[in-house]
Image (cartoon, rainbow, N blue to C red; front, side, top):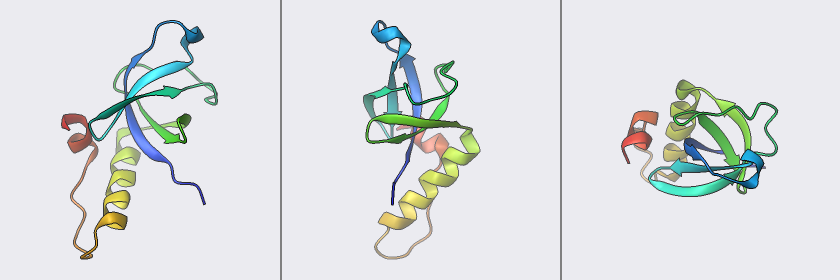
Length: 92
């Protein structure tokens, strides 16, 4: 089973033939390889699904919010309701 984490593109990193982007995942920024994406025309603010440091697909903000909510529910030991949204990730 693979776990894809949504992240928001901060900027495309110079060099590397446009293959790397700095991506924010809940406040942590990491370089992510874009080489597996069919369409690599990403802009700051775009959302992607990340697995093992690679962008697997571009998603919209609604899909990112849904994924973040699901991830929060999986990590919520008391079974409480998820409250994390894509907006929360942006402001983190």
